[in-house]
Image 1 (cartoon, rainbow, N blue to C red):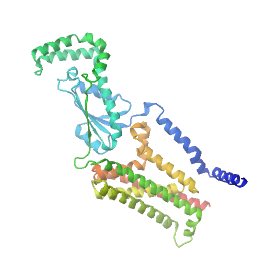
Image 2 (image 1 turned 180 degrees about the horizontal axis):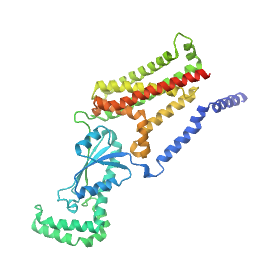
Image 3 (image 1 turned 45 degrees about the vertical axis):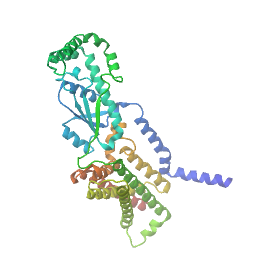
Length: 425
């Protein structure tokens, strides 16, 4: 028993002496608790990472509906023509566009109740946001009706406009026109119970219950995901790259601890050659694994490739980026335990803020801005662009440049840190 206790005390002392290990055991869990606490604290003031385009005419009815959407704290809206909105959504720069088509009623909102249609074009990879967006659109639509009913001045203008055009409505006969005039003239009394009217109208079979909201996937006409596999395979390649980076980072610290690295140092090889050899091995492993996964996707799951040359370019740049990340992580500690903890913690956090775990729309706006610093985001975007988004070379320049820059920076910092550590020892 004394021997067991002695070994346990020894391991605890080693843990306490390993400052980086203590960080991942105590400090990092605390930081994660604070991070998730800020996400789900119930404060929506920071939300607003769902970016959508508003498409419609300049009529008063349309603008009233758009104003309701703009007032939402979880939406960032921009008004643009339909063609531009479709292009932005297909490129992954917007989550969706909302095209409002009011019913033909000469601009009279009252006469269009229940006959308006709304087209929502959404990025196929953002299906998680579709149901949430539908709820926001329905809420904005009914709030538009409530606003109109509750505004006496606005309602009076609408009633006068409706009375003026009733005689010109060819789809009503004389008796129906007369009945509608009488109804509009007595609507002031009914408006006293406007909340009840809207509540009953929104029930099943009510006049406002059937809002025609049509969701369509927006991609280039020549390139669109034929199945869900084409959307999910970029994520599978990402996790393969994460696994390769974590494995090779651990192998470097193992070789340093066991003395293999220092035996290589006395061989006719300089430090840079040794590290380049390790980086080349990681690069080849990342590339081969991604190639095998894509071959499996093409043969077994029918994944269609939009551009094979761009896919090769995106895989190579992603692999290069993770070589730099691997090199940087490998110098964060002197023990396998420290590097293993730090590698998976850092890679998982990068994946999380890059939208790989939780859709960015459910996060505060500062997380959406922070996602631009995650290489995972640009890795997935580059792979999607080559597989189904139909990116051209110019579209790929930004994500590929960022990935290559991350690889160069990570490898340089890791090499410099390892050199400085050897000198200090």
